[in-house]
Image (cartoon, rainbow, N blue to C red; front, side, top):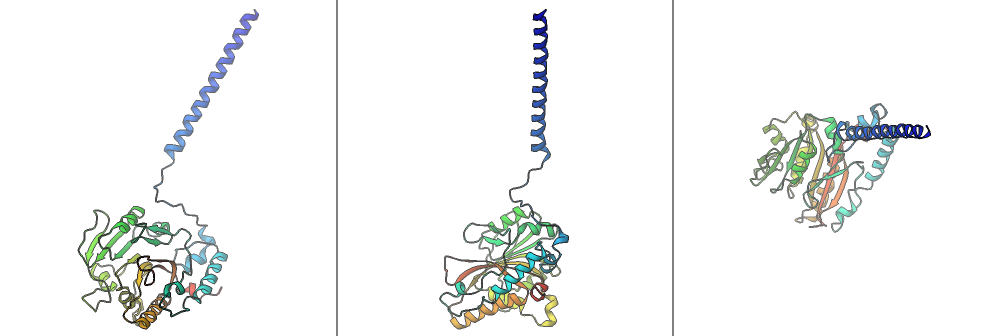
Length: 309
C-alpha cells in the first residue's frame, strides 16, 4: 500500500516538474522571438532623439528655425554664453597665430557628428538626425570641391538616404551610382575666371525656391569670393538670399597681402554673423596649421540675436 502511494506521488511530482519545465521553455522561446523579431533593428547610423516635448521648447524651436529643442531656461543660458564668447571673437590681427586667437565656436551641438573621411575631407555636421526629422522629403545638399573624393557624399547618403546631393568641381569626375549628381564648374563670385556664384548654380538647376540643408565648401581660397558675393547683397535684394541651414567650409589665409588678408577674414566672419550664422565647430588643418582651418556654421533665426535674455 505504502509503495503504491509513494509511486503515485513520484508520478505526480514528475508531471509537475515536466509541466513547469515546459512552461519555462515556452516563455523563453516567446521572449526570444519577441525581442528579436517584433522589435525592428535600427541602422547603425540612427541616433535616437532625446528631445523634450515640443511644447516645452517653443522658444528654442522658434529661434533656431526648428533645429534645437531644449527648455527655455537652457536656451536662454545658451544665448548668454554665445553673446559672451562672441565679444571675444575678434581680438587680434596677429598673422602668425590668427586662427588660434580669433573666431571660436559660440554654440555647441549636442549630437555633432563627423561625416566622411577620418582625416582630411571629413566634415562635422550639427545634429544630423534633426535633418531627417525636419525634411524627410526635401533634403538638398551641395558639395563644392571634391577632387574626386566622394567619401563625404557616400556617408551623407548612408545617413540620409533620401537626400538629393549635387557635387561640383573644376575638374571632371563621376559620382558613384545612386550617391550624387556631378557638375563641372569653377565656383566663386560669378565674375572672375569664368566662375559661377551659388545663385547662378541654383538658378541653372531650378533650385531657386529650395532650401539647402548642407553646403560643403572646399575650393582652395575661392571661398572668400563665393561667400562675399552670396551675403553682400543690398537690402533690396535680401529676399533673394537662399536659405542655407549649415555651411561646412575650409578657409585659407592668403599670403599676398598680410594686412588685407587679415582684415578680409575678419570681415567675412562678421558677414556670417550679420546673416544669422554662428560657429559650432572649428579645427586646424595640420597640413598648413597657420593658414588653413576648418569651420562649421549654422543659421539661426534673427530673433536669437535680438531677443532679451
